[in-house]
Image 1 (cartoon, rainbow, N blue to C red):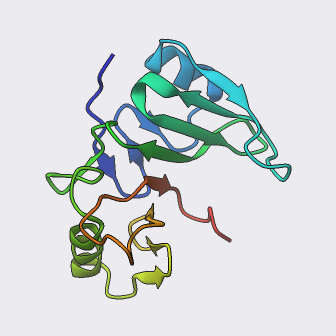
Image 2 (spheres, rainbow, N blue to C red):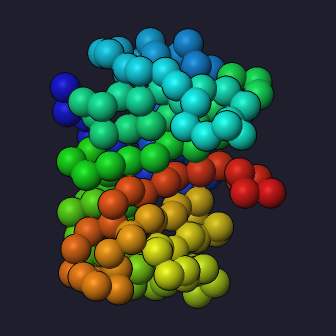
Amino acid sequence: MKMNFVVTPHIGVNPVRFNMSREDVRSCLGGSFTSFARTPMDVEPCDHYESLGLFVYYNSHRAVEAMEFTLNSGLEFNGRKLLEISYQEFERLMFGIDSDLEVEVDGCTSYKLGIGAYAPRKTDDPKSPAATVIIFGEGYYD
């Protein structure tokens, strides 16, 4: 099943919204998923919808706090497919909206937009897309 995921900063990604319950997410996304803790520090297990290219992360209240998208997820922001453009274009797009964009050796994060990219190949191959893009609500990194 292919979905059209469109980012609304600090609100969510249609049809999933931040603070939505785990049960509501599972109901609206349907399909199969795998639930597991990605790190020992995870408070709640995430849900991985492999066919959608989506990880949904939950807080201690079992409500959505972030979503991470992989290649072929169709994630869109400002009319651009974020995982189909080069990382270089991604960074330019984010910086054009957020001059405080935090750029790291393996990606970037816009706290203003609640969007970040993990791009471990950005130095070797800046024309390749990001490996993943995370969308997060306000306070996620606090």
